[in-house]
Amino acid sequence: MHIDQVPNFSLRQLSYLVTAARLGTISAAAAELHVSSSAISDSITTLEHQVGAQLCIRKKAQGLILTAAGKQIAARATNLINEANDLERDLKTTDGELAGPITIGCYPTLAPMILPVLLAEFGEQHPRVSLEIVETTQDKLAGKLESGEIDVAFVYETLIPGAPNHAQLFAQPAHVILAADDPFVSRETVRLEDLVDRDMILLDSPPSSQHTLGMFHDRGLQPTIRHATTSYEVVRTLVGRGLGYGVLVQRLKNTASYEGYPLVVKEIEPAVEPVGVEMIWSSSARVAPRVQAIINFAETTRWATHSNTEYA
Image (cartoon, rainbow, N blue to C red):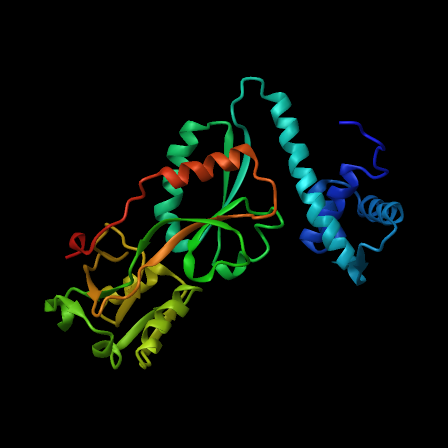
């Protein structure tokens, strides 16, 4: 391919802009990149002159907000920088072995099931690939895939931000957890109508809270929430203490709470729709070979899911 003209700007200038935009201030970008604030500020000013457009609005105390042109250039620059980093790694890797970082986003309650498999089994297959983990709720994933901050994420299907590529790994229906001495333990299944006046311990973390409350609202019910917590284990612990029941999707082999109180799982009657666990990745950014490798690994892995018989 014939190269007509070499760009006036450099990857370093683009990286300064992208980093400052990601962190929100020039001073934070300077600290991360180990350069002076004036070097970054001057670089961005020069870049603006070279492309003929204002790329950012600088606020007091060195704050920075991208303009529409700046957002467009930053998005494309991120892809260019990632490709340049991949090229550098490929040039250093002569044996064809995959190398470099992969940043994985994971919904916290999925982490105990997903992350050990990736870190142990995928890590063993590709020892020169470093896996960086970001545990976060799905509402905080918005934009992180398209910006390149996260390469691939594992989430519930109910609230996937944006329109990324996705593949379903498995699906599970929600279930009710009860203390071992709960009066409903003798029942084979539990109806939401029978729970509505009892105390609920709500997992208040999107999308779990919306999904749980939605199941009740779809049947014209309003649950009685005694406590709400963002912690999966706190829900199980409070239920184990007999302070209420819980509604969860993720199923663990451990039949006891964090404190050792036994828990019993009951299926919901009538049956509720299973919730899919999805792997998502950017639909616009180039997928690096190492990221494609982890996508292929996840799609072909037989993920362990546990039936209610293991909790009885």
